[in-house]
Image (cartoon, rainbow, N blue to C red):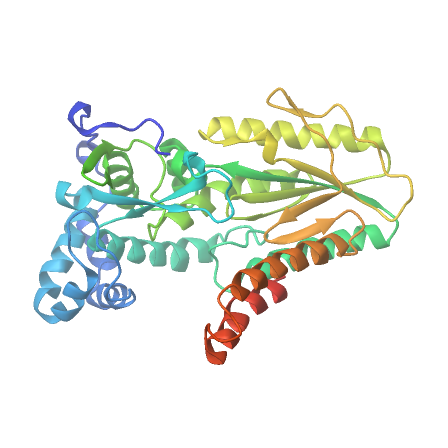
Length: 405
């Protein structure tokens, strides 16, 4: 986590000086962006007792005193946009590590998800910027329709429905569809600032917002505590997981990859950092040639943006009703050989090569049975949880796992 970070005492802040070449009315823009109505909306859109950032200020404090501090809060937010600068006190971010479920070894750092607890004042500004970009820039030039994460009106179910519908359309007409599933590793942690800046420039985002994003992302201070030990580092790349603006920044960056694959006539779709590209082919040589093109595009795109794809997380699977499945051999990614499979887990659903869902049903049945046995340990003949709690466990744990997808 947090690549290229350095200890606080060895870091020199990166200041951004656009003042000498200023061609944009920063003051007027900050006043149009930061209005009393938007500040009130952003402040009260957060739950009152959410965890605070490194400055120790909780959002409930701002909510309870909003009518008193509103004028001062607006001045602070406008000042940050006007000067493209974040005060040191608001740069401090607490990081907590949450274990990812189902991992065999929690001594591996990749089994833990770092959640950044930023200042609530920064979150208020992030929410306003996020809303502004979505309502203005993305209304003129929207994201690719096959992006399904962090977008209003889209969901995991929509991504799954679109993928399976496209595969069934190809398979049921007698074609063979070969899909390449991949996961961009550490997307939020590794994303480079030049990639973010290019994406913002491409959408016509105003200079003051780009200045502010650069100042914040390249000068953040993270602090991790474990017992009596505390370590602080300056982060020089990536976006904070848990930040209000981070999902949109990722969507803006990855949109270029979706469009690149679409321009090459491949059906591709993304849900956050989980992607899939589909090849329509009739023989092995054609499929292998097209697969190599996709893998080359993925490798070059990731290298240019400071990202990577773990070859072990690339799954290649052919969907067909024919008895003879095309033999896909000789594919590699970053000098690692790729072997085709007959089933893959995608967004919580097990998809098999025949699209008959037998693998998914067996996998779900085993998972639900394990959950029931875990719950059964809390119940005896003369002791245990009440029937009310038992039915709650069934409805809250068992049914969602059974019905998902």
